[in-house]
Image (cartoon, rainbow, N blue to C red; front, side, top):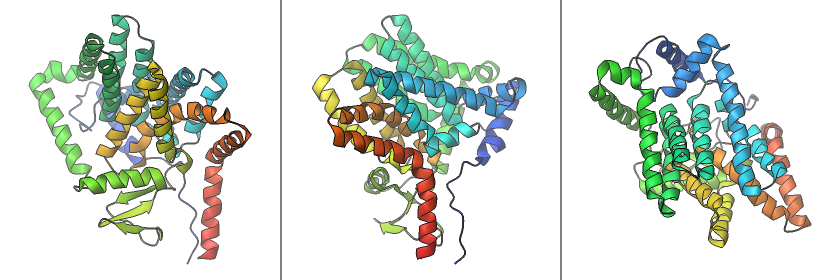
Length: 368
């Protein structure tokens, strides 16, 4: 059988230039959000279009927002670790995360959503006055206005505020978030009215359900999600057997490994991070630990709701895991020399995974 170079690449994702860039250009030129690519909220496409027209191209916006997102990841991780050096591990993890590279290299909607979502979470952690919660809600609303997956961060923040009996602040933040979402459709609402806006939202929901099918069997959906984060194997509708000899059948569905699309050293951190964070919450009940636990859980639920094969859909959970993991790894380092060496090996493997993947591919080609 002829040898094929492994598909672990940093290539261009077609939809960004086929749909998002043209939509953004039309929006900033006066077009309505309902006129092109209406299936996603418009804010990220407005930003993409603005950079494309006036600031050096759409990728310039992606680079700027991915850099700012890395900075926010550092700040949030420092809240958990109280250590600047270890907070940089969050940036390290994201730098070698194939999913994060994918959404940062091209004008994808996810990186803009992540920036506003993480900024909203950071504002919530630092909020001491009602105005601060207004700002947090505004950022979270902008996240949803970039892509609906930002809703998981909104729910995480609201759960945190409700559990801490900050009902008024929760109402203030959620109301502001909704207003921010409406603001992204201001041109459409002014020209066509609220009726058209609500009809569009219903159509978007229907479109997403029809074009993003998930297993109807709830058990299969849950198992697929658990298996993915435990092994990197995920449920797929179909696959090429010649490219995926590792495929197997479970509960009547096909599963293939996604090591070509992700960095498994990060994906496999989810369950250890969840268990460590839950233990830390019950032991200390610190505000930052509590908020990040809720955000982690709601991001996981959001991913579970859309069990799919597109790697960028894993970006919200990957980002949250990368932010929390340094605190867990630091706690392990402080347990002794054996744990310390293990942590450094893991961090080394994160960076070395692309090379390891190529080596394993070569080895498999020669063996089989």
